[in-house]
Length: 463
Image 1 (tube, rainbow, N blue to C red):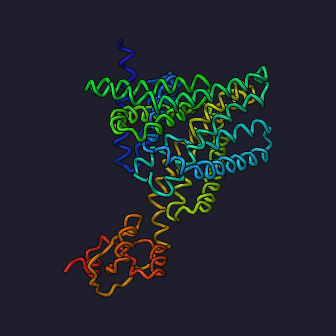
Image 2 (image 1 turned 45 degrees about the vertical axis):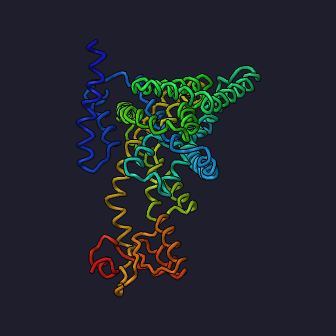
Image 3 (image 1 turned 90 degrees about the horizontal axis):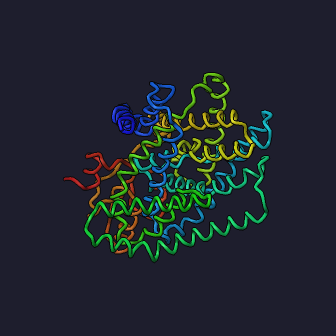
């Protein structure tokens, strides 16, 4: 009993101590969890040794995260994102894999090892990226939308990657009929999820809601997620992808908000546990044996992946001030890489030593990502603003009845309605490209910071 309670005590104590300190220093919660994991892991204080068991259990936090994201997306909205998911996602996975594969061949690595390594490391961390977007309230931005679409495609792409691994190794799957059988099983499971989500789950939720016992509703919410995980795992598919699909099917139900509020605390704690487990899984023994090789691999990996992502950000027409952030956000390796490399060891494509080396590189890249985002916030943002920020316009006194501060989506709707009805308005916006664009359409728009009192007074808001 003491041992059962001791480990949760250590995890909670590490999180409670490390995360507030990291937030206070401006490092972010994710890096705080990672540092807590390093501190209590085998290469820190050595308080926890069963790292693999904790890592597998804590992946349930990623599963809950995808389920809750699915609840925010109804099927119509998801269908509208199909081009972004499959277009942007396939471009990212394909180009990053090609770049890493070419670099590995150039240094003399066997093409099978190079291909598995490139495919696995092309996948980014869903947990880190989505947790960062949520923490910064940037999910709805162009960079956040593009990142989400790519991460969703990666969850889908991980399935054929794992299926293709045995074809490159000695342990090839036996029996040609097994492939067709597996495909039928996958189709049957997805059909069951769609049918159950539409016609079975909602009546059950209605019955449970009538009991007016919140703890039973919470229990059923967890039961739904766990059952979906096991169902997807039984046919070798991504648990996160399955729960995401289940969430989408319940997105337009009347119980969506209740499900969100019940599962949100579990998601936060388990995601934190996942990051702690990743920090504990960094094998500093391998790092100390070959520090320069591993540092070179991490640096090369981050440079290639970030460069490809930056080029894609320009092609995707992500705003200039978000392009570097987008590149850093997805620059790390992901949790699916651990699964791909494990399958490659089983198929004898990778040796255990090579797999351990790649796992350390991926884990260190996950550890470096919050630091890259910190550099972006503290240095690059100021540098970009200092180099490109134009002087604010000198505004002659205005007497329009309406002032719009910021001409985003909502501002555009209001502005066009007023403009169409002949009502004069003054627009203030801090995006120079937006200002130039609006002036071409005849709007009275000025560049400036609408939080300044003197600017608002000149615009006519204050007397």
